[in-house]
Every structure is written in structure tokens, then in C-alpha cells.
Image (cartoon, rainbow, N blue to C red; front, side):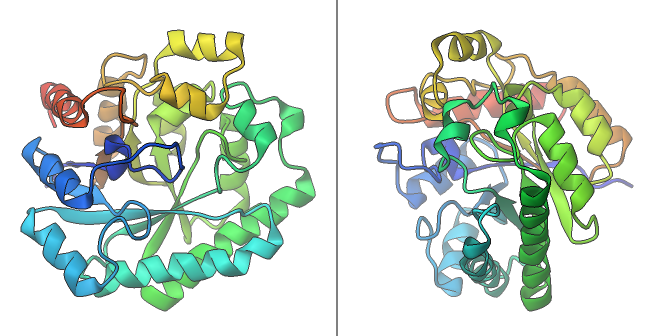
Length: 302
């Protein structure tokens, strides 16, 4: 019998982002309590230091809220060879923490160091082919991703998934296709994010169908197409698009979550779905958004 798909939320839904957007997020105790209160059974780690970095303390606080810890986002500037060594070190450090805290099933969610290259950040959602990596740069990027995943696996036993993301070098459907073609499918899985795929011009349903054999982890994020059009017209950068709420509550954008779920279930997906809605201070009430998102998914049968 297929294991029921489990639903988590993540600290970014409370404004605890990997970016400094001049916004103070709630502390981890409030976030964990509200994740549990709104009906989720798992969480991701958040930035290093957001939750305790001592294994016993980390397990104690996550367990006290009756949650599972299922992943940790680790950004690495993979296009820069000089950044690889420190990136591997950070990824292994996070993986070791997860393992020692009792979460050896969790994923390292590897990504580019999004938001650090102005050309990509300023054009997020409307990337042109000439703004991408060259063939030589792709080899560096892909080999670096493989190297991170290999080190994590060999040193801690944890698996790594890659998260395609706005304002990074793997944003568009074509860029994601290139990365997956150049990386080892036994080492590096895919964290498929519905909202980022839609923001980049892709159809999330088709993306899930295409990459189902590579998908080990899923982020459910919605995309507001009207704001996407405004972003293009007004030339917003990635951060402005996020501030404006381009990633809206589930069911209020154009992602067909019902069909995405059907594809996952038809293919016996047994992993986690992590809800993400980047709610920054002043944009709304994260707990209410989290509850609305959970209710929406319950109506879809999970």
C-alpha cells in the first residue's frame, strides 16, 4: 500500500528567508508552533542558526512540536569554482547536523546562491537565453552540484536534491533540463517547485510529468500571473516581485495543484510536499496564510 503523502511547511512562509530583505521574521519557536497549529507534520531547517545548531537541542525543539525535520536549504555559488570548497563544507555541516539530530532521512536542498548576480536578479521571470551560462560554465556548475551531493552522501549518508529558483542560474525550464542532463541521477535528485517553475515560464503539470523519475522532494508554491505581467512591464527585480506577493496563497494563482497531485499519486510518489509562501512582515499574517493553504490542500485530498 502506498504511503500517504505528508505535508510540511517551511520557515520561509514566516518571512525567514535565505535573503536579507530588511524584515525581521518570528523566532523558531513561534514558527514551529504555528506550523503545528495549522495542521502540518513537518518542517525544513531554515537558515543556519535559525533553529538550534546543536543536535540534541535541535531534536528536542522539533520533537516538542511533534514535527519531522525533512530538509535544509543550502545555497552554493556553483558557477564560481572558488566557491565550491566552502560550499561543500557548509552542505556537509548542515547534513551532519540533521543526521546527528536524528533526521538522516532529510534532504539537503541544494541551490545556486540566488539573488547574488545582478543580471539574473534583475531579470527574474523574464530570463533570455543570452543571460545564461556558457557550455563551459555549465560543466563547472554541474560538476560542482555533483561534488556537493557526493560529499554529503559519502560523509553523512544524506541525499541531495537541487532546487531550481528565481534569481539563480537554474531558473527557466531549459536551464533545469540542462542541469539534470549534466548531473548524476543517482546522486542528485530534484526538488520540484511549482511556483518557481511557473514564474520562469513553465507549466508545472508538464514539469512534474517530465521529471517525475528525478523528483525526490516537492515544494508547493503558487504563482500570481497578473503580478508576473506587472513584473515584466515594470521591470521588477526578483526581490520586488516577492515583496509584491507574486507567490500567493495556494489556489489563488494559476498552478493546477489538483493535476500536479494526480500526477504524483499516479506515479506512486511517497515523499513530502512542502508548502511555501513567502510572507514577509507587512504582507499578511503567516499563520492565517498557512491555515488557508492547509485547508486548500485538505480539500484536494491530502
